[in-house]
Length: 384
Image: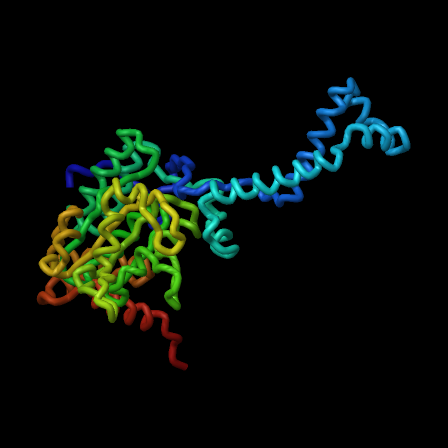
């Protein structure tokens, strides 16, 4: 395909390590982290500063004073310059007030110790991953196309978005939400996670068929027995990377999940504000009740039938239709996978010839089962 250039000869899973990623650090939580100081710590610091100011007013050289032994002369100076009872009372009140003001300004006053500890991983910010240059984007696209040529349309859109992200100087790699629509077993989810590996950013797969409620994406409020933040935010907290890739698999099977009181908890409702950059920038987590900047996440949705995907989701995604795999694609996959797993060349070629002439209905899962069986047979111990 003419629109790809460049090639990489390293290991298949090395993430194109010849290019070092460009990274930046940003704060994504709308909270403030203050030094861990108790009221007693602040009192001690204020008392020390008070005494230093008094000594300065009395003309006592601080350098000379610091060299004194703690004898009668030292204690006498401390008695003269230390805070009296009235000063000490003011210091205590001021220290308590400072602790209270910090608590209010932090945005964390409503959280317990464990949840504060979970958010403490964001104290130094999170990393945003960006490709170093457009040539790096070219190599990633070339690798994806080499491994999965039947996903060429998806690869082309990702390639253009990667180049544009670098060209515009964005702080993080930013791809538009993508919906990969096509029959099962053609590698839609694998393509998405492979893209994340090559880019060098963490990924998470959420199966919408088994988790149709929005809790897996947005989290749930306290009061539920399984209350927790959503899995995208948990991934960011764990990896400290602000632009992971999230795969929502089989989004056409979400349906509508309602409570006994008729409240809707559909996954699509939880996704909508995260797919819009403006609302994602100030997204409010229902679990922590804190705002987070989630606009840098790359979203890849997959479906087997886009006609059953909720219309609001369709309108926010680039819909890419992936056709059924041809025999030539299956044969190509069998040769590559067989060689990677050590099958003899004649065995891999025989399997490829069989798949090339197979009737419709074969997919990657069926091909992998055949390869697994052949690999197991090749590695069988010889009979005595």
